[in-house]
Image (tube, helix red, strand yellow):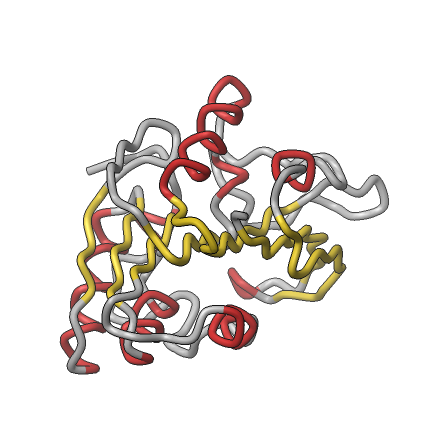
Length: 203
């Protein structure tokens, strides 16, 4: 089993580390790309699957991958418990290949696992996999000198620079762009994150 991420251990038990309620920001995606059976979603770094399963419940055809075997196991279980299908498998954001075409590509809290040498190729893959008119939603943790490193910061995570994410989507139609500082208590210790988010459409 992979030891590249602490989340492999944190996802071991029956409880869901992040809970099972979807991220509130998914409503923005649903508004921009209303669900139907023929609309395909790729969730990159799905964790324990709460967002992937929610999108399947809404009616999308959902594919999801994560580096953690425990995360994928729990994604499959949550989908079964909710009576929906999610195609879920173990893969690495740095090396994955996918020939599919998607209406939505979604990744939250995962892009900071990209190694510097793989960033350019990763975003080129996203461009190729996104259908014309399709949506990409990505967020990433960014460095602020006045914020301490989160207590559950992982082995291979690396902070991005403020605004760096947005530079990879210069030729896309930006639907939403955002930088926020928020409080979190993942890992049981209250702390702060700064996060950049982009929702954009391939024209």
